[in-house]
Image (tube, rainbow, N blue to C red; front, top):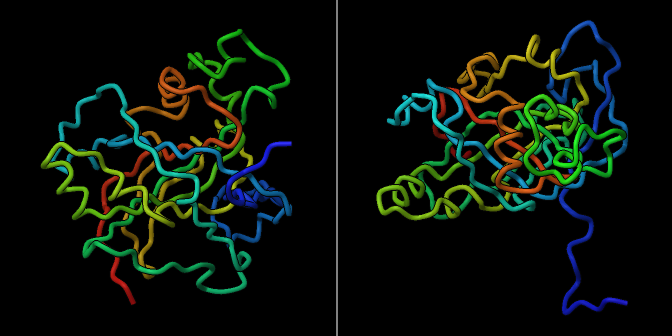
Length: 253
C-alpha cells in the first residue's frame, strides 16, 4: 500500500454534468430549465487555455491579429470554481468568491470550455496516435470531446502586464485560486455547438462580450489537434478556447 506524507486532495476539483431535457433550443446556461443535474461530476485533471484565439481580442490587447500557431498556458486543477455550487436556479447568485489579493485590476474573460475524454473512454480508435492521445488528427479530434461548458479565465491584468513587460511567465496573473469558474458540463454534438452557441458574457446584467464561434482563429478541432502535439490528452483535461473582445475589470463589492 502506498503511504503519503500528507493527506491527498479528496475529493479532486470537479464540475457537475448536466443532461438535456429538451432539444428545442441550445444554451449552456446552468439556470436554463432545459438542463437537469445528473448527480455525476467530471473530475478535473489539467486546465489548458488558448491565448488570443479571437482576432478582435488580439487587436484590443495590442497584438498582431494575423493567424499564427496557437499558444497555450495552464491553470492548476484547483483553480476550478464550480459555479453550480449552490444549485442551478436556486439563487440569483449561484456562487461567489473573494476578490483575489495583489491586484487592483481583475479582468473577466468569458470562454467556451471543452471537456476532454481520454483513450480509455473511446469505444473505437481511428489510429494508434489517437489511442495515445498525442498527434490527434483534426478529423478525429471530436472523438475526444466529452462535453462543453461556459467558463471564465479570471486574470490579474496588472500583474500580467508587468510580467509581459519583463518577459516573465503569467502564472501569478492567471493561475491563482478560483481563477477558473466553470458552469456545468453538457454533452452536445459539436455541429450543434457551432450552429447554435453564441458566446456572451454579462456583468451585472450588462452584456460585455458577444461573439459567434466562427470568430475563433483556431476552431475546436484544430485547437485539440495542436494541443495534442504538445501534451498527451487525458480524461479530465479542460480546454478554455479563448475569449472574444470586450474583456474588462471586475469591481469588488
